[in-house]
Image 1 (cartoon, protein in one colour):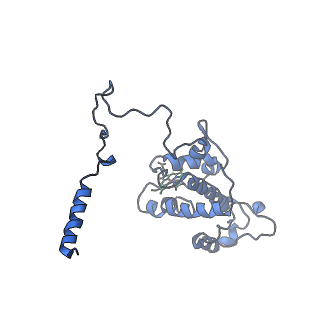
Image 2: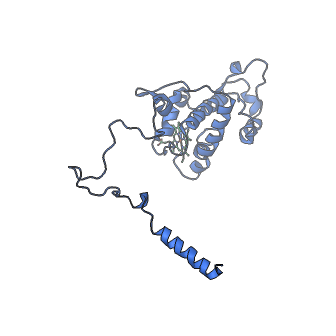
Image 3: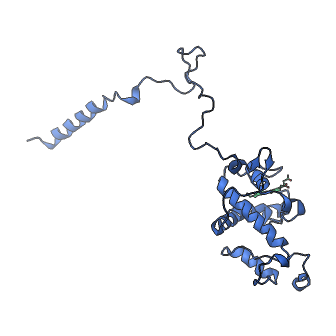
Length: 219
Ligand code: HEC
């Protein structure tokens, strides 16, 4: 019978022996990245990818979805249908990524702006209310002035969801009583509307605009 000691020695020998014969892909002849090689006339070991090569996962055939533009101009439609899920996702992403500067209301009075960062314009000004949807997508994708871009933090689909939510925010601050669907009440007081914005459960209720007759009620 083998003693324990001899068995251990045998196992150790076997391991050493096996460890010594790894002549597989680990030691195959190869060139390190960017190493020099005499094989090609330009002495580079690596070849450039064939023109038009697309990295896996980077094929962006739907240019509108990834740029918000048609040719050089921002388009004004959503690249996918908007439903409740899209709006909820848009609100969540907006409150995470945009509200720190633009505020949850989109009036440009976010915490960071209050503490000295350049104050963004309100989303409720005439120019931005009329701006096409693709414009907002482009600002998020490429940045704008002092504002950094968010292309690496927010996926294209989420950026579009934020666009849809911004449009709803704009409507919430500028709707007229005529735009409230029949049978629905107009929210009468600001505090209720604010709590709707903060609670996270339901999209913000539409507030009456300053053009409305109800303005006096709120003051
Ligand atoms: C760090 C603060 C900050 C954050 C976060 C931020 N913005 Fe801005 N944004 C700004 C500032 C500042 C401006 C004005 C830039 C300027 O005029 O130089 C601006 C401008 C804009 C404009 C208006 C461009 C115009 O034509 O005037 C839009 C639209 C906009 N931001 C959308 C967004 C969206 C959507 C998000 C979230 C994904 C976001 N921003 C996040 C600071 C921010």
